[in-house]
Image 1 (tube, rainbow, N blue to C red):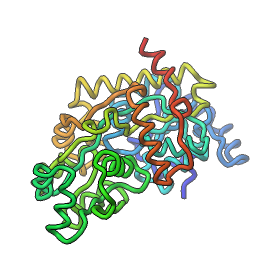
Image 2: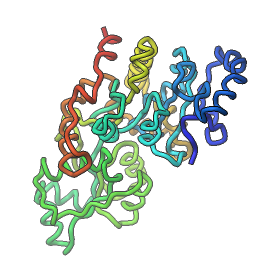
Image 3: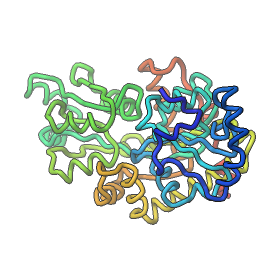
Length: 362
């Protein structure tokens, strides 16, 4: 497995390395000294993420991390003083949580549930910006959608009586935002008995899509652009409800910042929040630019036309202010504790650092 705290040029494409031209010569001049340090310590090079010559950023391609893609494509990262060493964790053997916990990451675009897990273990860092809220839909086969329209929550019982089996959901892995949200909706919102529903966690969006299209499952809880893409293909599935209708401010993607960044480099930390907020404004006011950015990140898997349509969905709600998700995040933390994902709850103060956003919003 790669050591994600050190440079690994062979595994990163040019699009994930965001070196500013203005610092190239300075880095080249320091390379000899940096290589000596690397040989002695294994990972204290100029690109280690611990020096503010370089800011180490972790991300994945999906929609909940759209601010990253806009910041990348539109050159907002170049407004920061450090160079950016960005790693796409869709292509790496380790998870963002593992790399971050090892101290290799300064800034992570990730889901709220891994952030809660890390803070339950006192990993340094906090949520300094939200990426989006109310970003998931419950997506079910059209036959069940008809039952839902007629019977509401009782549709699950009617489905079992008609089909002789439980309704089956596929969703993202245990502990993911989708997994926790599905359990919350079924248990807390609908009061559905476990003997009416099966839930099969899967390793990401592609397996979930395949499970739906193959007929192996009956529904899912999913974020954009997957429901829009399936609708465009004419798949026999419908949106039966939306997270914003049963959990206002439902958290999803967030930006998690290491303590060392605002402790030792507060000006850089505030600049990061400023550029994040700028990216959010671009998403809101110029969605065509945002669609192009995420389509480029996803490649052939996401045509720009689908990305544009998905950004018009009511499940595409992009924000920066973490205060908009703090209350609902406590519901997530409570669900994670009940499901055995964490041993005890995580307080808002422990998880969020609101002051950075407030400072730049004044």
